[in-house]
Length: 192
Image 1 (cartoon, helix red, strand yellow):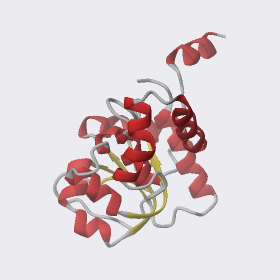
Image 2: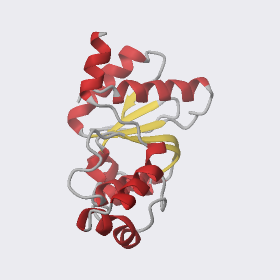
Image 3: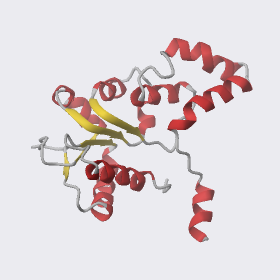
Image 4: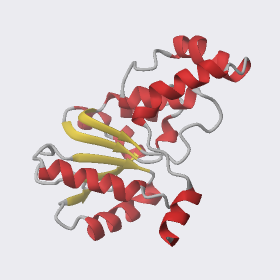
C-alpha cells in the first residue's frame, strides 16, 4: 500500500540490534510474494543487518543472522523446528492473514516464541471486528479477551447494535498499539 510499514519496521530492527536486544534474531513472516521486497528494502535501508531467507530447500536457522525471512506456509511446515527457538522478535507482514483465529496459519504463528512482536497490516479489519481481536491475540495474547468475551463485550454491541460508546471504548484500548497512516496524509506530507 506504500504507507511505510516495511521501512518503519526496519528502523525497529536496526534499533533492536543497536540496543543489543536482537541476539536471537528476528523472524519476519510474510506472503511469498513479498519476500523479495523485504530483502530489497533490508539491503537498501539496513545493509548492516545480516539477512537470510528461511524458505525453500536447504533452509536453516543460522545463529549469526539478524533477520530471517520466511513465508506463512514455511512457518506452518517447519512449526516444530521454529517453536524450539525463542526469537528476539516476530514480525508478521499482512497480519490480516491471521484474522481467522482457527486457521492453521494463525494457530501456528501464535505459538512461536519471541520477546517482541509486531503485526503489520493495511487492513486490520476487513469484514468483522473479530479480525482485529485475532491480530491482537498474536501481539498481546488475551488483551481483548477470548472470542466469546470479545463478541459479547464489543462485536455484538458495535456491529449489531451500533453502540458508539462501545466503539469508542474499543478504540481507546486499542489505539496505543495501532499506528494508522492514511494515504492522503502520506501524499500531502511527501508533496510539502
